[in-house]
Amino acid sequence: MIVASAALAAGPVEAVGAADQRAVPRRTDGDQPTRRTLAQRFPDLRRHFIFEYYPWYRTNPYGHWNEAERQPPVDIAANYMPELGAYDSRSIAVMEQHAKWIADTGIGAINVSWWGRDSESAGLISNLMDVMRAHDIHVTFHIEPYGDDRALRYASDIRYLITEYGDRRHWDCFLLLEHGDGAVGPVFKSFDTILPPQYTDCHGKVFQVSNYTSDPVWRQQTDMVRKLFASDFDRITLLADSIDHRRLVASGFDGSAIYDNNIRPDQWAFFANEGTARNLVSSFNCNPGFDGVTPRHVDPNSCDPPPRFQPGNALYDWSQRSQREAAAAVSIGRIAESFRTTVALQTAPGSANVRRGFFLVYVNSFNEWHEGHQFEPAKNAADLTPAERAIGYHDPDNGRYRLDALTNLVGDVLAD
Image 1 (cartoon, rainbow, N blue to C red):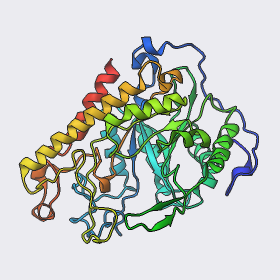
Image 2 (image 1 turned 135 degrees about the horizontal axis):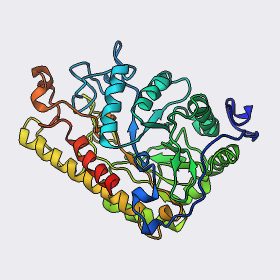
Image 3 (image 1 turned 120 degrees about the vertical axis):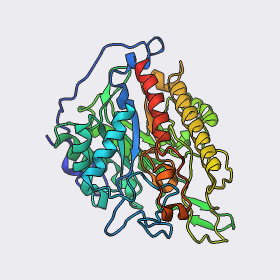
Image 4 (image 1 turned 90 degrees about the horizontal axis):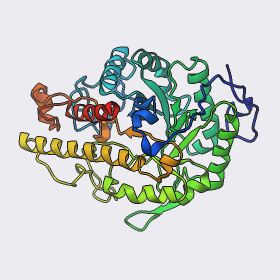
């Protein structure tokens, strides 16, 4: 069934149309969040852990693997060689393996990086959802900054995603979260959302931010989303990757879902408290740190220094096994710290999350190989070819150590 008016068919939104009633389950039973375990509060608890998922890798010709001046398939735009090698995201076999790995962790949803209706990766979403459905994994979307005027299409894009991948598929695997108060509805996250109008670089040069959007414009869009689907869902949750809580309120977002793995878990309590003071929910991500790939040639005048392994900002000799294993141990520590911190903050009595019955942990990420925070298994160091070893990949002895660590943590929560 198609919902909402044709006023959102394309382009900027100017009018609200009527929405048809959708058969979405609603609950009205009460909840006592501080007296129940997570599993008792959220019957669909595994859906409240969501992998960030990137469907943009290509072969023949190569796409994304060839960024940062790399020449795949041996030399790829990552500091780790995937167990699957330089794969194509369109491959059903790849999707099947990804779905199996995800399901084995106990996680029940993915958040697909979405770059607009006409993007190259948009064409594979139906197949991806077919595969995920077969493994009982639900799908939602991370709306990326695909154009400078993306914000003007925000409500239109959400209508499109709900219609195309919810209604037309009869809601076979579109993520509808069941909140602690019984409310049911979709959740959307966006990237590069609350931005300043300009910035000054390290040389003192001022630049205009091309995709800056004012708070009133965002508010028009978020209000539009809620009006469109007021009769369809108990709740629709809109999250932005920002810790500017004043602007989040002004722009009409429900809360913050930061993406930056360089914001340490020991800083999150401050931001959670700031959000709670404004009745904004907070979703902090479980992550293994950051290990981004560096271009072969770095501009010495660049204001962006080459990335270092985080946490710790340490320099490692990646040719040494002991150094790779030390980095893996640090990464395991970050996974455990970030996981336990986000769970604790989101379940803290008196928090906006508890008051609003909200709990959601994004896992950053399943397969963003460029930034080095992937949980998708890498090759074991012993399985690298001589040519791959010569590149200097960071693969440790156990290429799936991150997935193993996460599986144990999720399993403990689900079993509680």
